Length: 231
Length: 218
Image (cartoon, rainbow over all chains, first blue to last red; front, side, top):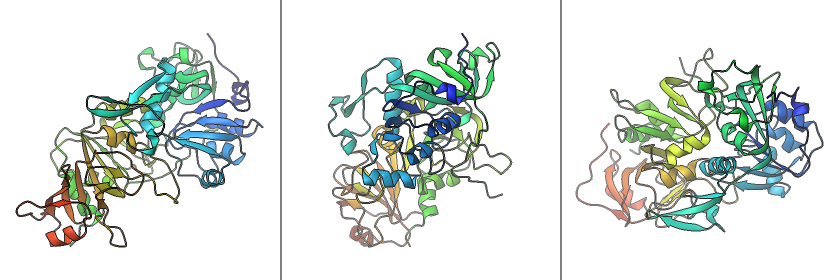
């Protein structure tokens, strides 16, 4: 089955105002640069975005934030972005902060058909306010509900036309789970190959989870904290 | 003499045993990697999705796809593995990570920790800290004993929003090594030249002192 679309423009067909969209990546590592750039050129607005972080002021989801396309962010850490702070303090942007592991598992559960689950993270903190709690094995846990999205946008290193994906190093992060949790999942890859060229023993995301795939262009792969050894 | 950041890190490194899988937080905990005793094998976990974290790269080996949880560029060691965030937190939540070392604004005598939010200041988020403190078997906190105004950060009750409850096992501050034993902070070791009285004065929570308290030897 060939799931190839031409480019980011074709890939985002059907994303509308007020939809929920997941974006893979940790910081700027493994973010779907092409699709974010393309969305930032549209007038689509009111989006609920689920992403561990929200880019930086002039890159990644920061671009869409600057255009006021995002109504709400669901994230675990959002500290790298001055415009984010401004919009949050002024009330323009709604923010739901979640423990990173709970966020990851909520997305995994969404993709795996598990409506909710218990975790210890956040019990006794403000994250637990309004959530059901229950004791298991002598420890208190919070009920966390699964997350799904109208669209999930992920970035992989290599992919084939059937949608099988391989990530590189730590650029996997939230991409694997989000690929499972989107009703429509868009994958952008650095290298798109015909079916049969990827070793099936080393596929991270099976093609079943991916509906659209394209080879991205001009990857900038910006580094947030360039840190080098002294020697 | 109170310990400096590197001395706090060096003292914490002694808590790490051969074969341990260890998660190091941002700040002083990151420095612990520099003091892991020779001859033991320790695997560092980074919650953004890797085991077997190595030192920072050179300009020639830097790769934007290879970062740690602080978003710094890093390298990997032989035997390393990469995985997604859900698997990473399965390692943490499932108790597979042996030791977690992180910083704190405040710790209470019950082992509650506040480390992510100061009301009125920029809210950045908790990242993985709430997952780590709720699940790790052995949580060691690296912190300053008092704030810049000299007020204690080892309290009866935390005043800042909590990261987790009843979870901290051991604290290494600039003044002392202390265990959280439920009824208070049990003094284990003193920084060289720091008296029990000085530590008592800097500790708002209950300080438990039993017998002679040795100095940390470097």
